[in-house]
Image (cartoon, rainbow, N blue to C red; front, side):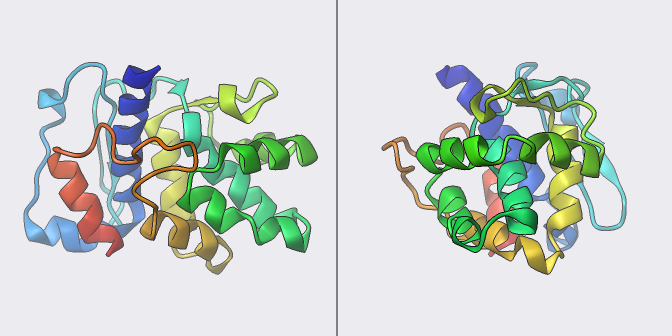
Length: 189
């Protein structure tokens, strides 16, 4: 499970850069997709439309906590006011309990976001924690919502992510020593 977490962490960093990368591109940070280990997926979607990704970026893999972005967006669109208020902390602290509760209340949420954003490599088998996605889908989604005022709680939750998740696990696993971590920090600062 931990190796899958590292894969998804790298995916998250790549997708965080997605809609927010104009300053990064100008800073001259480069990533050679061919130099990335085979188990790692990276997709960068620049604001000018350029997409840089690894060859395996279309593989659907365990989404783990990244699927909370999809769930949270739907709740912000359609959920009850009290549930909307829970989204930012669900993202900030990676709250599995909140995700489970919201997924039970709104089982249509993730499938509808998959359809709304054309996330063809994302599969929801009936429980948020078993969803799979690709970095291509994550990049497509995050680049679409980054300027959407509705998504402000999601962006704020990522921008102010707690160093340790609600379950006690460090949230910078898999990214602590990567140049992409620096890039993500530049783009969401």
